[in-house]
Length: 419
Ligand SMILES: *Cc1c(COP(=O)(O)O)cnc(C)c1O
Image (cartoon, rainbow, N blue to C red; front, side):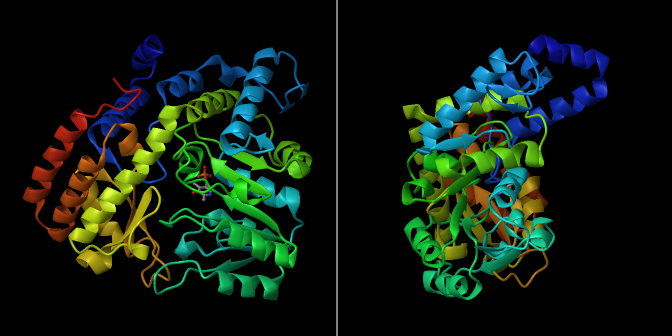
């Protein structure tokens, strides 16, 4: 790898400079965006490997091009390991990322115009769960459920009422910004009552499911679970669909040739490695630590009088209401934290009165910092520093001091894959 980077520095210094800049940014700052992570050095190696040269349209054993001895082997391995990790009957590892993965499920199992019951965007659902700006919102009739405004919990009676009224073909759960686990048995019971299929988009927290610290929707009879491979799972950027055997043929046809052409075999090799790692005992420790760090951070914020959506966390993520906590919007909070070397992202909160580009909160997650080896002590320290910076939004001298402390902390926790 190294000699090629050296080659790049001579042949295209402009791209090289940006690569080095990004590497330095990742090394010297704390990454708290809950959907980000540092992938394994072995995954970085295969991503930049000759697997990227190969066209492999089709599936192992039935491809449209020759020369598939090694690509077949690596895709079979990725699928088998994914099934083992998630106790699934079938796995498709070809979706190019999370959004096409969800599209493939809707288009494979439903007809355009069908009704899907899904989680409202401002309450934690993803764009692909029927937000009006997503093309999926044009193709399917999404009916959205919300969380209980008093405490952020799921009101399963209200969801059941919506299901009885709208008779969805698919009941969809899973989220992109919600700090609690889900009651899959309750969702399954609602879906069964109206004869709907069940799908969980576990993109954010599949690493926690794999590591055994959060519930697995497939253990509760869900038809389909989807997940990105690059978030808490620590893999390359990609998507996976896990499903019951009875849906396997429809799902596979929907991904290819329905929606996509050639799969990215370098990514699939990376998914095989990632699933292999997820089967190791160390991964269970990692997932448990991600959770402990999030809880330590939540406790520290609450100790400083911070307002967390739902009052805490049961997963890898916190949603901090910065308006309520510090009187500043999420955009300003994100910028102040950027200035002290801590990366988070602005986040709409349930029924946010503020517009999406200046929402009321930020989202904070622990998967990446945990990958560096940070533990509860560091997590609490980070929450202290964030509180200090956000309590004094104008004090740039203080921000400089905190930034220095962040850099010193980071120097003690090297990023895997960055020298
Ligand atoms: C991240 C995410 C996606 C989309 O993944 P992309 O790879 O960004 O397309 C889909 N669903 C959920 C719940 C997510 O968190």
